[in-house]
Image 1 (tube, one colour):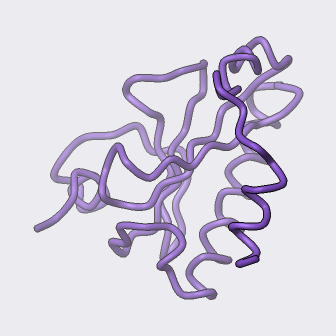
Image 2 (cartoon, one colour):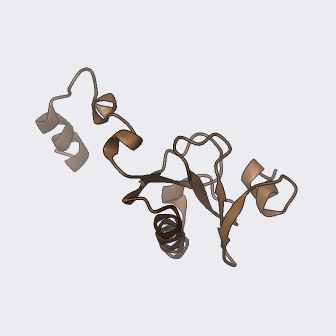
Length: 129
């Protein structure tokens, strides 16, 4: 079953395309977090970023870099921030967020865990110790 993003690429659902190449598509998010919020997707359906083969993964990030440069040039922002969550749509996508300061994007305190884990124990678990 085609994802909503595949339908956008196919032209079955309208979008505001800002960039495209033979394997990727970039369009403005319809529920933007900031002005210029853009999604960069592979045209091929991939559900999970880290399941992509290395070539497709690298190509997607290079496409996002091109689109970020375009946004920075055309919108005059200081930086373009990126976010990949992977739950909203079962089709890999990178959020590009034009910003001038961190406050344009989010309060960093909101990203902190309420209960801090024992970092030594957690590192040991990840390392298999």
